[in-house]
Image (tube, rainbow, N blue to C red; front, side, top):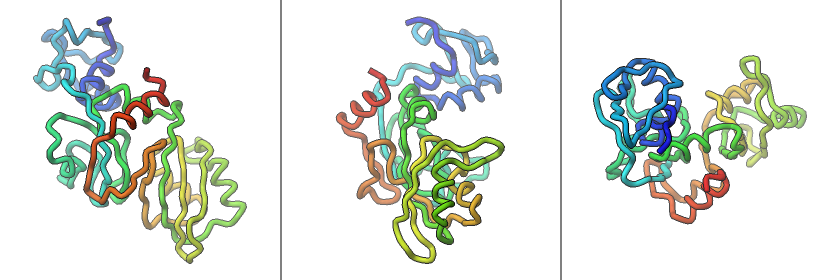
Length: 241
């Protein structure tokens, strides 16, 4: 196998996402053949080099797993939390291999969250260039005016950069209505900040779809493995074949 960047190796081996792998490298927690490596451009070969993370030798995952969880509110999308809050791992009891979340959902958000130990799959799902749409059901504190809906679709300025075009449709006509919002990017607190731009607050947020994959009847806290057909379809659409 040709040499690859360390962060890609760690991601593919199911250690972490590429972004987290870069943090591990920069923190001096990765060694190659006994030497600490802190430069992100460093390459290695998992078949011939001894690569350790925090002293633990890493290997190719024996089985590649793809899991969907209906994340409940009140837990963080991390493997551990310095504030000792409940993490999503609590809801993956029975999963023997190490997997990590694909993207994130806020502490008070719920809904569809993917897990895998396939680093390339995770990378392609999360990067905006892949244009994998994520759909959310969002309850807010008031109605958007028609011109505001148009502006929402076109993109709003967040932290000096305009959001990518989005889709939005109203699901109810109550005083505190539900909207379905579809994004192709996932900036931190993006939906909350987009509605706040128009003077509205988000009361509830639930991810209901990633690409073609629907949350369906999965109850909060429940998970299931993706079917071979679902995995194949994702890989075709992500051009991983």
